[in-house]
Length: 508
Ligand SMILES: Nc1ncnc2c1ncn2[C@@H]1O[C@H](COP(=O)(O)OP(=O)(O)OP(=O)(O)O)[C@@H](O)[C@H]1O
Image (tube, rainbow, N blue to C red):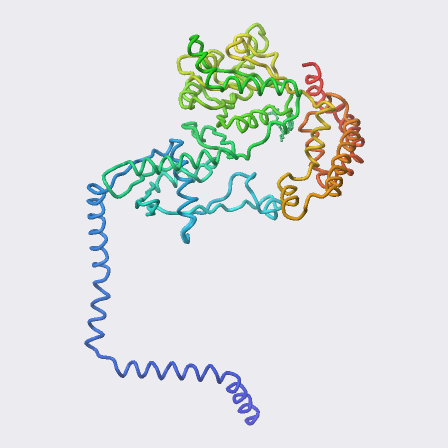
């Protein structure tokens, strides 16, 4: 037993011997260091360590004092209020061009709110998981731009308050102070102009949609959507061209002069009507992108009072699109007694409140107002008279022609990837052209076959979009499945409440 025990110990020793060797070395080093220690030096070291915090506090106070002196006498500054649109422009420029180029070690993290922004496919599939948004966390940052030294400080208190607002997208919103060394504010104005130009370039690719914040206190950017081309919203082609021409003419500077010379209010109003899911909101967003305008969204059923509506309109800038959604929720036709009771129940603002903001004292020049409704017959004639509504656009159920266009759009190869392929890989030879032409021809044939199965003016475009979402990977599969889908939808609409929606679309 004894021999076996000692054998085990020996075995263990041989196993761990390198560590024991290392420990021996550490112990030797410690012994050498301790033997050379001088107790006086140790005491002065301890004294230094104990006064270090006091020195640190003193240096900080001195720095703050001298910093405020420097700021007072040698620094020019501009403060940008949190709720001003300029704030967002400055902040996104600073984030993109300064902060992100530095190694960031401090972030604010919060749960991503906008589901549309989720890039993580796994998170999308696992619906309960929400993506985390990381935002650079800084209070003051110094940077050199051109020949000047600048700094930007932000009020972190208001930043944290904004972060608690789920509709806040994380950029801007807190009071900013921009400063630079010197007595002139010119470099600051130039910097602000650079930020503005940067923001303008951004809007070439995006539409900024503004909505009231959750307290109803101010307009806040709700979403930044990639521009949707107007040709991706399918409805009557002639009507679409007429609408585009009308807006283009209205926005032409010469038209503005004409209106002013003739003492006419420079405003334009449109009414988009049709069943739900026919593209009224999509068209409004597409128009904002087409004409480079911001979109201010007012959901009429959510407006608390006439005063709120008035305040909203007072804060909307002149050059933009105002989208008044579901205007029928305000009230019904004045002659229709039976609906009068629903009016009070559905919305808290009144017809006179709405008319007042459309062309009363507070209504600004240069706006485009788009009203949408599913029930145009309910609207009061005063609201839709010329001057308030200059053009009515009916967005109905989908025609065979639009269904064909939608099919081609869904299965046309991505333009950017096609361009990459043609530029990088191929020399455009005759056979290649023939191949792409053939592809185009096949797509046309398939689209014709597809649309022949779609009954005229029966389904909403959003219904058809739902079908495409199931067959996005194969055009032939879509064609093969369309007739059974149509049958299913028709039989469903026979028993569904949807039948009323479909027949309303046909009637209008
Ligand atoms: N005419 C259309 N052309 C292309 N897509 C459309 C069209 N109409 C609807 N869609 C698609 O259907 C979806 C819903 O459209 P949208 O919200 O614009 O309809 P809407 O008429 O505003 O509906 P609602 O009256 O319920 O607000 C969007 O994803 C949009 O892409």
